[in-house]
Length: 517
Image 1 (tube, rainbow, N blue to C red):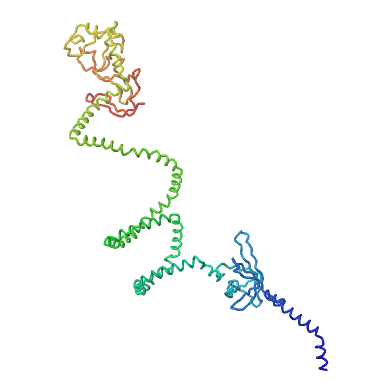
Image 2 (image 1 turned 90 degrees about the horizontal axis):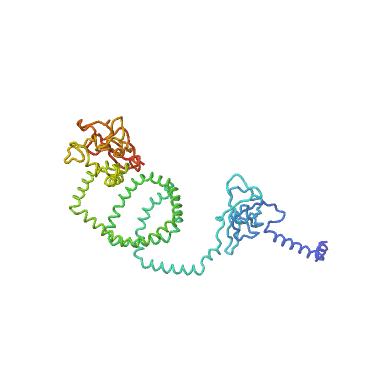
């Protein structure tokens, strides 16, 4: 019976071939789909968002601690809604045995071989919360190591040539400084010993070294536009230091004075803080002024363009001006100049009260023009007493008395009785043509009081003479202001000083600024 059963199986080679083909196809199918996980095997799926897929392909492994726990089943590129650059999203099919995965777990992309094969590594965290199936984890560029090909491509032909040049140059430099290197190696232990407290101070958070580095970066960014000017400054500084090296003693003294100078700066610089605060407060105004100056630059340029030719003529002008200044210098150094100035000063002091008294007679009463007008009429030979006849005829035919216009050697003012017939009645008494000796032009307030023109003798004025001279008065003030003349003005011009009475004749001399128009 055993022989019959065996012969029956062997007698069916078609069945054996079919079974063999089925087993082979099944093995190939399973091998082909093994990259996505075995069929009918449950998986824990999640996604990883990375800036760069780093040459991963579908089917690459996901490992933890060197063991395979899944595979990459899908890679796609997406762009987020904010319009940020495109990112790669990896879909990972993990074995259910890998779950749960803490939420603080990290993923990174690692090279598997020098040929460029990669895998995703899971670094499990310790958080009690776990990721849910389908969750998305983001990683940054630090989780993607550089490829060997990227490292090797850095060394292109120009880079290799420059490396070769640097090695030859630095090698020759080091070879020529062997003794200096030996001294450096000798001093390094002491340097490293002294540098430890320095490093501790720099590492102290209170030092704020990171802030200092950030400020240095800002300073470099700000000074970049003026880098050429700074380079020129270093060149000039090199020339300066070269000059300093020629006098080592002076440089040594300068360095010796540096510590007390710095100490003084430490003590005094806090006092500048109020100034700096004020400067910061006015900086916006300075900025506004700078903008205004920028708008005024065309006008300034025009002014400079117009002034440049003028400045070319300044040297010739300076030469002439030098001659004039030399003449002035000779005049001021002359011994007679002070005498002349003293005399001029005395003359001014003498004329000042006279001019202040006479000024209103010309500026207010216009007596200068009236004087010449009346003088012409006074000497004309026409008939009639009103146009000059008195000076030539009536003066010689005056009535007989001791003191008349016709009397030689008259010692007193002539009494006017009988000289001229009265023509006007003032206060009911005869009016004679006699005026005061010093009639006023203005009052104490500068208002017009022109008494010398158009006014007859007033017997009501106080008398200071004997009774036989009753018709003559020396009083200088007529009651009330007489006003101005026809061509005069109502008050003293503004800014003019004046006196009401001539100096020395009255104890109540009035002096003051004009209040006229």
